[in-house]
Figure (tube, rainbow, N blue to C red):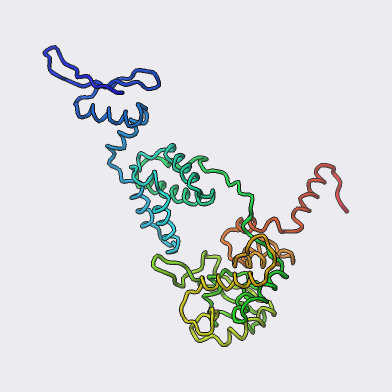
Length: 374
């Protein structure tokens, strides 16, 4: 327990107050000018079980004039430009749901130790390494904003703080064409043109459901569809906006079988209305939840005996794997899928390129033996 001793001069007048305590078996002393300051220091010490460093940190935080980290993070969001509203909504969700332990700290007093405790807390409550990394990325950006605004001198997020992603399960499923056909054959006939478009083009669901008849060139020398918009979630609902990235604005060539599967739906679409609706009479958009339900109903009806349930996005993976098997390289595939960075394509589909591993093994063999295959 910390104690306070009044210090007096030769005339007996109190001139200062000395606080004494033990930290790790060592006696510590601190002289303060007022009784109020001494009591404050004593209270801080006792709150942190006489940990001198922790008490000093707490004192600095009490006297800091800096805004809280939550205030800085919200300010960072307000300064963002050219960012989709869905992204803004996600960032606000991070602040609401994942800032425990950080939100009320003065931004100039947030330390690497605070971040480590915060990351451990995120992991303890069941957040995946990917979720932790995503939120940490936002925290890192907000701290960079604080540095630029001269609210602190450094970014405590720098360094290797994040947990490793040791998940052994690959979320992506690579369905065969036979499996895709089985699911589509068990789908409602009205929905089948949509699924044929997705497997034939690799479009994202939000891109496909935003298409108008004018986006298609079905009778061109090379039939195609132009992607210039997509459904996206805003702060107050859903709306059609720009695609996910700049490279997502693209033209996707369509095979004759895909054209045949979607032609009637495209040509009969009402002017200015999306081509693919969940039913002939539905006019309310968006319909993402209904399309998910329709897909899962077809998956269940097909009863393929798969270990896990394939998602709509797995149609995109199936499309990609079919193209790779047919000889398309990853650079061409990245352009077709609308990936902003080819590293995304490589990370997801690199293991499917059939001859890459063979060429690598052959190169190693040549280096080791000096033998060149004829």
